[in-house]
Structure formats: structure tokens, C-alpha cells
Amino acid sequence: KAGVTQTPRYLIKTRGQQVTLSCSPISGHRSVSWYQQTPGQGLQFLFEYFSETQRNKGNFPGRFSGRQFSNSRSEMNVSTLELGDSALYLCASSRGGTGPLGTEAFFGQGTRLTVV
Amino acid sequence: DAKTTQPNSMESNEEEPVHLPCNHSTISGTDYIHWYRQLPSQGPEYVIHGLTSNVNNRMASLAIAEDRKSSTLILHRATLRDAAVYYCILSPTGNQFYFGTGTSLTVIP
Image (cartoon, rainbow over all chains, first blue to last red; front, side, top):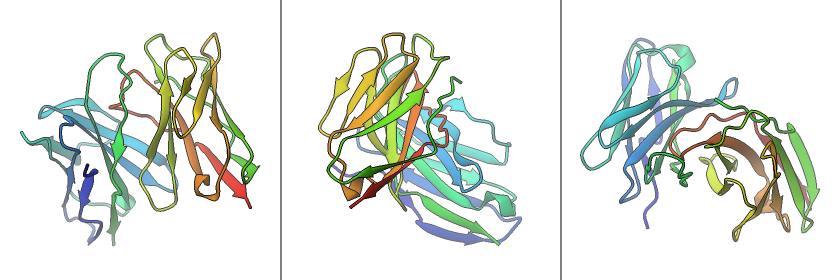
């Protein structure tokens, strides 16, 4: 089956601009999570969407937002870009069961964002 | 969020077993123990997860201590393709992970 698809793979933006990243989950998966990976901070959880609703949120400023569509595809938006937002942004999809199910998550290859 | 402690790095000879330890003394009753690995220039990849009992799959085995305060990921025969950063994560679901720094595994030919 097709894996998690993230577009674009690479992006260069100027400080102050905004950017939108896209994630298409595995068919049938209803949960999409987003992560930021930087050399200094490692992998950090941004937020998770399930059935078009944000279900969990990490500790990031309001400039980072997201949404999920009825087909489970998700977008992540960063407004007023800062140099420190340069990172690899990863999304992961899973079936999304609640409670102690411990389901497997599948990660995309990420979008490499460079802010100049 | 319950934290995990892993060694920063480990080395193994090719075709030998590897035991990657993880301490999680503050684990809660609903936390599953998840292991993911990240190869260079790729997104993390699921390895295995478990709750209380030891688990086996085609990739690895997970040994969980009786008190659940520690666990060990076992790669039965390390190959060069197993060189990666291995993350041990606690989460009640597979939807929200707080990654630590992981263990960087080097496989020596």
C-alpha cells in the first residue's frame, strides 16, 4: 500500500513569510501527527489531528497551526517565519484509536524547510 | 509525559545480537513502550511496541521488565542496514510521541 506522502520535499522561504506543508496519510488512517526535527532540539511533537479535529497539541507558539480535511489529508501552516523554523517537518499517520491501543505510526520522509 | 533514558551511542559487530536498553521508571499503567528507529535522511520507522509481555516480530524482540520500569530492544543479528538512531518512547497511543535523544547504533563490519 502507498505510504505517507509529504509535499513538497524541499522548500526555501524568506523570514516573515508563511508556508503550508501537506501530508497525505495511508488510506484508512484517520490520525495525522506533525513533528519538527532540528539538530539542536531533536524530534518534537507539534500536534495531532483526528477526524478533522485537533486532538493533541505540543508546546509550540500559535504561529504553527494545522488542519485536517474530510479525506484525512492534513496541512500544516507556519506564519511569520523565523530563521529558527528551519527544520525537517515530519508527519505520521496511524489508525488513530483512542485509549491504550498503542497503534503503529507510519512516518513520511518529511519536508525540509529552510528559512533565509 | 513519562520520560525515557537511553545510552547516547552503542556499537555492535555485524551479525551479532544487539541489546538496546531503555529505562522508564515513571511509566504509567496505560503507557505502551514503543520503539522507532531513524535511518539517515529518513523519517522514523516503527520497530516494535508492547505493554507488559515480551513481544517478537520479524524485525526485533522487546523484553519488558516485570515492574515495567525498563525494557530492552533486541536485534538478533545486526546488519549494516540496522545502523540508525533508536528511540524508546512511552505513549498510551500511537498518535502522540515525545521523542528523547535516542541511541545511535553503529554496526561494525
